[in-house]
Image (tube, rainbow, N blue to C red):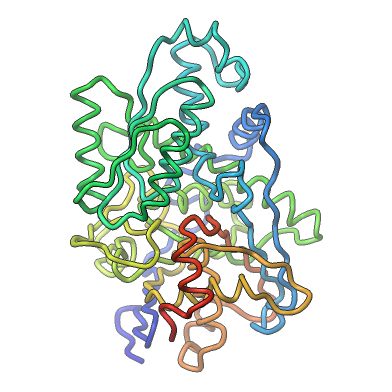
Length: 412
């Protein structure tokens, strides 16, 4: 084990501890993600016929095996029949866009009204464009289909054709490019500007922040559900929330919500990334207060996290408040998939894809590896800890899921 400047370099995981964590609510503003705003977002989501809360799996036997008080996993494989959480952000962003074009507040419209002929006549023909590793694009295509509009989706090189076909099944145009994720985002933006399309991208950059903010707010429905489900189980608050980060839109949304709700009693936040696309880890190591990009092919099993540039909107939150940033080899996420897919007797099964299982895989590694003893102590993970993980996707790439869970791909 090598330790320097707050960094632990271990066999499968590198952990960078935040050298300058802000006290709760003393750093970046999280009011955008308040419980009040989350209630407003969920009120809209509840107008969608397919809406119902996704399960919160209480893995009591796994918690005992790990030496923890609680392990809770929010299972997003059930979300709207789309097998991933991303649709929460895309549907809410599209609804906000349509509501604004109609001169209404989101609280004044429903899914039924926005898909009505009256609304369609008022807003006209719109095209929503985006880049995706799979789940965001499918959610956006589904939202456009719900509201009788068009979607054009681009995917980075190496994307699973199954994910492309799932997007096309909702009537969207979708192509796999020969670019990495971040270059594909830039290409899609340029095409949208040239053609008068509306970009609905789950990352932000200077001059493009409003719609990503809507997407982040859309995700808070998930966090609000999880909080209510925990409290119904008698768990008043999580002590630790483990959050996977691609561009950081999702991680920022969850962190902002729980920070806003609990304030000085906020949980310990730990950010988990693949080592091939670990832009928040690299930014934390640099420790200069600015985001740093990771370049190259960004090739990782965790396809949904293969993003090299931090999201501008969530960057300051994810700089100020997490206690640590973990950069993980693919085998860590693969183990998480197997652990959730073949649970200990008495625990519920969670079918979790490669990005969804990253945090559970990290939790297993840090709790059960001898070399991680110092990390456990510094993270405050012990028998009193109540840990929340979010399985952000199910088996959205069935072939990859089987390769990992059945045949041991990316084994230790």
